[in-house]
Amino acid sequence: MPVASGVRLLAQAASGRNSAVRAALKQPLSWRDLAVPGRSLVPGCGGSRVDSGVDSVVYSPWPLRRRAAPVHVVSENSTPTPMLSRLKFKLNAVLIEHSWLLDFGYKAGYYLFWVEDAVRNFLATARPVAPSELERVKPNFANACVRVDVTTVCNARCTFCAYPKVIDNKTLKPGTMKLDLFRKVVGEWGQHRGHALDLTPLVGDPLVDPGLFAKVEFAAREAKIPVILMNTNGILLNRNENYRKMIDCGVTNLAISTQGTDRAEFMRVYGVDKYDLVMDGLHKLLEYNREKGEPVSIRIRFRNAQKPSAIIRSADFNRYIRPYLSRRVQVSFTVRYDTWAGTISEEDLSGEMMLRKELAPINVPCANLFSLTVMPDGNARLCGCQLKHSDVDGLVIGNVAEASLLELSEGPRFQKIVQGFYRGERPEVCVGCTAYRPVTRGWLNHYRAAGDGESRSPGSDPVDSDSVSGTPREHAAQPASSQ
Image (cartoon, rainbow, N blue to C red; front, side, top):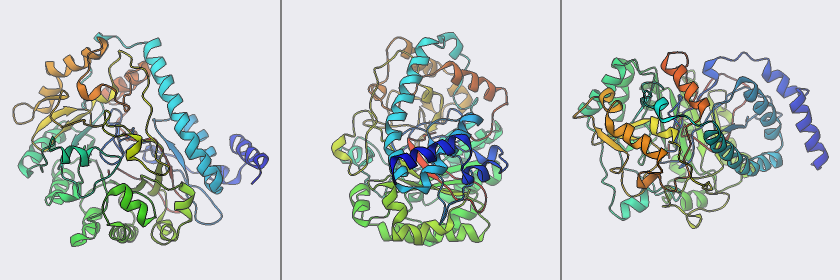
């Protein structure tokens, strides 16, 4: 298509004259139409996880009409205002109708995200949040989300993740959380009326845990956690009909992390020959979810070495995924990846994959410090974004066997780490971290609103990510997060 035609389409999108845009904007919106599952489903739960090594993701599942099977692409990086959300949708509605524009938008997103990072850093220093203002902000209890890593064992060796390297170096101790410990942590979270529970491991795959579904059922039915999300690579979806259990157990938001629709690239990126197993399990999951009325919001998160256009044109995509796309079943394409504190380099990536660029460090605390993760051994760790050598590092603030979540969040170790950023003192894992997201005045205001109970709806992570995503016009509603 000529460039002039592309410009004309963009102009139509901006003015609302595009018919697909007009039809979409007539659809009613509610808080359920916005979700930030990845490393974050709610404010403050943002950050990258094992699967992506990228920022928090905002899912905006507005409907879209397209000639064939529609796939709506949206920017996934930060919680948008209503106006910004609509503008993004208008542009994305145009992009998905023309694959060359989709690829262009995917590439342009890399630089736009970099600009956004730079602007955020500028705002953080231009109108800084004073140390005293952060003394009353506790992780999790203001943002209504806690993360529990049920395992640190994975069945893949993804090139964009630190897991293979820390396992080979034997600096990470693999483990799985015991049910009694899980009940203690999640039970306490339920007593505090916790809104969201993220079961996506920092490194690992939740389906490796043989007690996963018993834990999810406890969280949903006994602890009464309204939002339960997780990310999996999908390798074990077929085992013991896990795809059925995943839909029936109480999970509300689920993300499937996979490379794309090329078997050789899957093997190269995920390090295991499981492509056919993943696609078959994914197909059964989507089919069963549709049969049950789409109770689970599903996101297929491509960690793609392929171009987005190559994926959506492929036979496997059109056979296994496209027929099930809806407002509750969507796809996303990862634009950039984290370095895991220097553990991952450009040489580890392939095809279209690109690393995030590190900006000049500033002496402002990272917003990701205000999300608490409980590791399988009970250690409570700030940030769920990344590790360098081990998950036992300078971000650990205590153990839930010795203190409650509330006590740990009010403890001196937490404030010492946060206040250290103002003096340029960071834990080793935070030095050179490309997932760094400084505290800004806008972030603080949003946090205060959340703490007052004014903003407890989904909207927040990794989290989650530097991606573009999609959904079609038919059906109705939303997704989740890992690998």
